[in-house]
Image 1 (cartoon, rainbow, N blue to C red):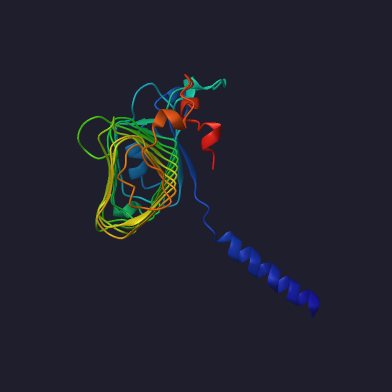
Image 2: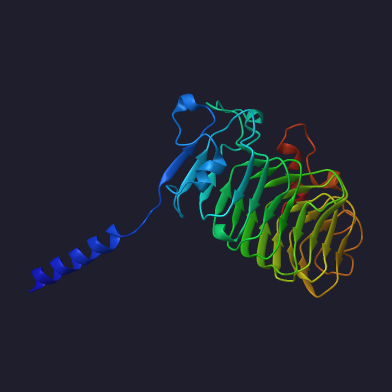
Length: 276
């Protein structure tokens, strides 16, 4: 009886695991000599053979792969960026570039990682993970979305639009460990209180119009404003607008915080006296 029971359990386990779909891996590379599955990222996403839950590896290339509108749940992983600034010998030092990226509802729970995007990113879907990316000439706008994570990314733009914007109809948006560079002007605006910002650097104005959580961030220049009850603790600000919030340090200059050496990464390293 014991052997029969073990046999039945074994058959059940094999049956269940055989029905699990782990997703397929696809390669996109503009260099056809590398025998990729696709040479165009939009064509790959639109192809019926690429199913929801699959992973797409996007090879680095000197030129951009063009525009991408994502409406399918996939994971897209690029080659990274700033590779020539590191003392490693990479086979391919080029980043995986997109001209624009728009993520719409059909792409809910997608993952975008290690991509360089050369214009503002629009997120209009739930459950998006946007991690380790470089948005070169724009920011990221999140609207009609919930349960999204923006992490470990670098954003840089010039002009008068916000680098990070979270619309009032978005919920449970987490933003952590990012660098937002607006050349000292408007950097961040949130219209929802359902957002959490932790361990980020903002180069200019921060507006939390509906409150939220703002912890352990650095504002290099300009001010901070919140129009509703907010949890604001452990932050550094270059001017005095945080003076009404206990547990923050204000009128602290960026040059007093960091080493300011010539290294691309080292210039953002905190001085020993500011470690917490």
